[in-house]
Amino acid sequence: EVQLVQSGAEVKKPGESLKISCKASGYRFTSYWIGWVRQMPGEGLESMGIIYPGDSDTRYSPSFQGQVTISVDKSISTAYLQWSSLKASDTAIYYCARLDSGSTSWSYYWGQGTVVTVSS
Amino acid sequence: EIVLTQSPGTLSLSPGERATLSCRASQSVSSNYLAWYQQKPGQAPRLLIYGGSTRATGIPDRFSGSGSGTNFTLTISRLEPEDFAVYYCQQYIRSPDTFGQGTKLEIK
Image (cartoon, rainbow over the protein chains, first blue to last red):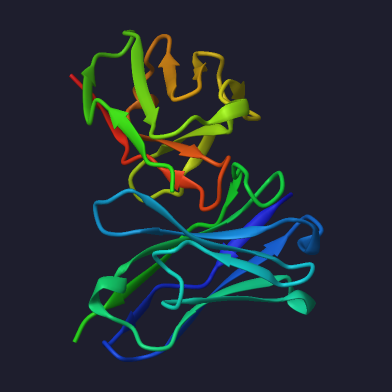
């Protein structure tokens, strides 16, 4: 059974760093792209970027380039999303999702979401 | 970047009625690289349709997708109580993939 299990909710202050995770199981982790999606409070879905665990090829959506870093650790089938200096506007739910057919694809499998709250 | 515009923003219907949701793209989404998702409060999105018209595994046949080029439609033939949620379209023909702003389907 394919599963994506994300790390728990985080409460941080502006300027702090953060790394959240998405642990995959039930399939060959290195064979499918993983994407990260942001959902700000009461808003819609925004694609942030994708990574191919097989070779760590990473592509960012223009709005998120330079704002976050996406990475993987193949040895533990885990993808990461990190910030070096959080802003209040980073408050959102972050989902990871497996891309089912290449680097441009729909996603059937999603993580449960990680709530990130940034407040002074 | 391809912009997707969904309409209406909110749709108020009763169980048993037919729902028609629209998704219009700013550029052609050829080969129907379009998906539809359902999202309920506190839950991750759920894939309904991909390839414009292919139902995902486990999706009831009351959900159907159609359209081509720049105009796509999600139809729910007969609404069940569990269908009231927010629906998003997504294009994945060009990176970055993008989502529409969503249509909220509410009980009338």
